[in-house]
Image (cartoon, rainbow, N blue to C red; front, top):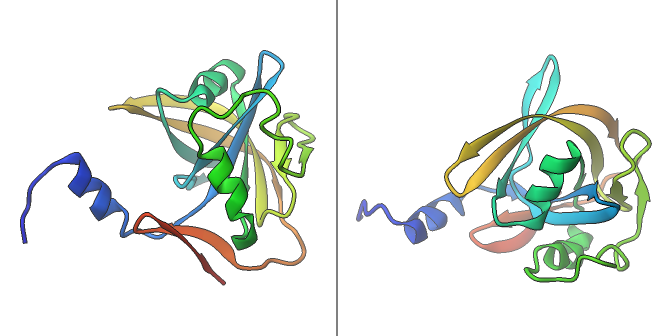
Length: 164
């Protein structure tokens, strides 16, 4: 087996990790911003902290660094079309949430997607530059968990799947 170090091989290797799929949302300049992510990770229980890794080139990165807060909706398996939509580069900023049933978080006012497995509202506490991405660390302000939970949408080897 070759040990070549190139971006394509690294992406292939990291694709062998199963990752839950989330939609991250924020509000900046009066506009909703959203993106699909598979990097939502818990960091600490005291205080409650999470992190997300975001490419510098995304509109969402600029918006979250401006606003200082965001929401995370962890997607159920039947929400794959929303994941694909919010992962589409160049989609219009205005009206991007029109096809996504959602409600507003009580603590931040960000859009939280209905039908998700859980929601977090978060306040950014640190941003660490890391190559072509930034690691956004945030304190959890609220957690919402539905009474019933179905299969989760996951990403594995460049494809969507589900796990119950």
